[in-house]
Image 1 (cartoon, rainbow, N blue to C red):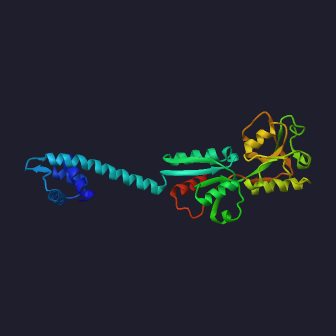
Image 2 (cartoon, rainbow, N blue to C red):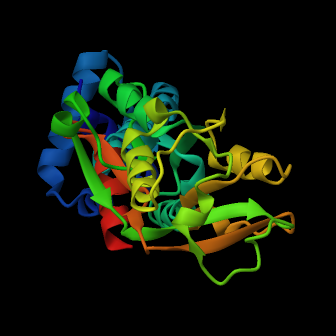
Image 3 (cartoon, rainbow, N blue to C red):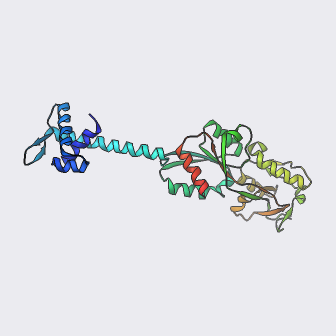
Length: 294
């Protein structure tokens, strides 16, 4: 017994006429009659009473057609589910993100992706760049919004789509002597106590900030560490430290700190989307396609 036999039986039950049922199926009437006869022979019961004037379901036919409708509906659902999964329209996506990406690219990317693929379940996990790279390589993340450059094995096994560069800015307490400046020469930060994320959490960005400090004539030596950008900003607000951060961190305005451009002007790579180069997932492919379209 095949699905085509079930479709034939349901079509005849709906039409109660072999000719109309055959037309609805797009086949000739003789093959339809042969399919029904073969089905009845296999079942060992008559499904339809036929006469020159009418076609009627037998009690066995009523029972069979009721079950056949459920089977066909399930088959149709399975077909749709398979096609949607194959297109990446359903499934689950686990995405890592650095804190600053939440204020930069994440909202636009997720809105665009949700509009195109509303049935994909998205889970976000905040973690530093280095941890994201490790999780991507281990298969614990499907994609990550992190800050390049990547190092080691990650640089060879991960693909990256960059969203663009952004300036580095100083963040100082609102009452700080430099807070009202239109621009702060980096050399004037030489004697200030820094709060920074650990280099291991994001070596690329850390080294760029350290290089900027060297251009200002001093070596970056943080007095305090914090992993997340918003935590760093909160610690600056205490009045005990200052920091240098990507300008996207300033998108969440707060009255207790000031974000001030620095001189010399310096830029860093903004958040980028990273994914495994050999990942066959159509869901990931759709996320990458969405990112490239932004």
